[in-house]
Length: 441
Image (tube, rainbow, N blue to C red; front, side, top):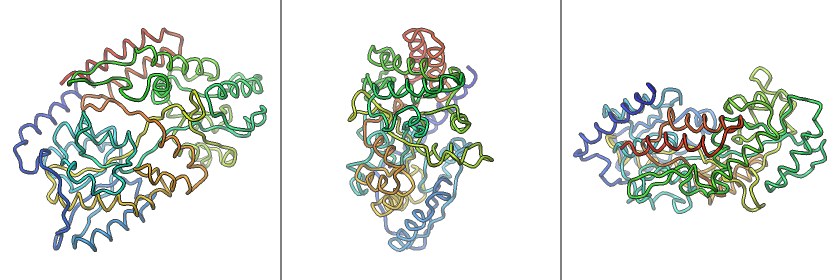
């Protein structure tokens, strides 16, 4: 409860300060512009170290193009995810913000509501491939009704089925499952083949992995308004919708029949557990296959590198996989940036077709047009690319969504369901908590 009160107080502070400063000419009500008049100026850009470690060449190319076309210099300040929200709050509230920045797509709603970002709606069509931005990633950068854009999609990540091809083949399964029925039949064979090992999971499904569980709920309910939906500023819950509950029951049945242990834990340790050899499949981000096969000193098992396969999490039919949660990063221009027009221009160049094509060698680009380039970069990318191109879902787009309260409420409900408690009852409890938060404003 203390964490919930603290989170609410912090959000109230952000919103109240934004209200006090709303008359500023650089407030969020101002329309974004693109400026190339940078002679003698230097802009500051906050980018996560993911890029510094993974695709520094993309950043360098964007910096060079920007400097050549505007005459301005760029100061890239590399950031780390731990404690980033606190640093971001401090910078945005103090008015000492960079000219452009990266943030997680689950963070944006709070800052959009607080008036912390420049409205980029009027220049959205100047950004390459904006008409084909990935659906859930684009939605995370919009206001609640989707009529305005305050943050630009950067790159995405999606969850897929990661499985041991050798264990499946040993059980007589030589082609990956493409439907839920095929998945269940394959898991039954893998389970039977390893029946002598009481610790073996054909499919490990941690009870608190709400991303995976909600994906199954969305498979039956749909991706629009999953968890909760808004109408005229009022949120109503969808967790108790019969179709959502049906999907959660499918997840619970898979958990009960094919997963050993894990009902009361989350997914954070599943890669290390799979590396130990008692798990044939998990649901995880595409990069987790690399974690499973990492050096032993990092908790992985390099011997598995050539036997891991990835496919979209199967759904009812082969052409309709289970919807994936689409995580990733957005890019925005702070309302009180010293050079907002130049900041927006840097983001335009940083996300143009050339830069996103180069980025596609390392991560899912921000638009459907270039996902094929990502898939072509490596055979391992096909599954995550297909998942991103398919139907995806996202958390309720509200500044009052609470990681400390709402995500925990979902985790607790799903964990209880995994241990055998009634799905309707547990989801009702979670829904009560979530709606109290979403309607707090």
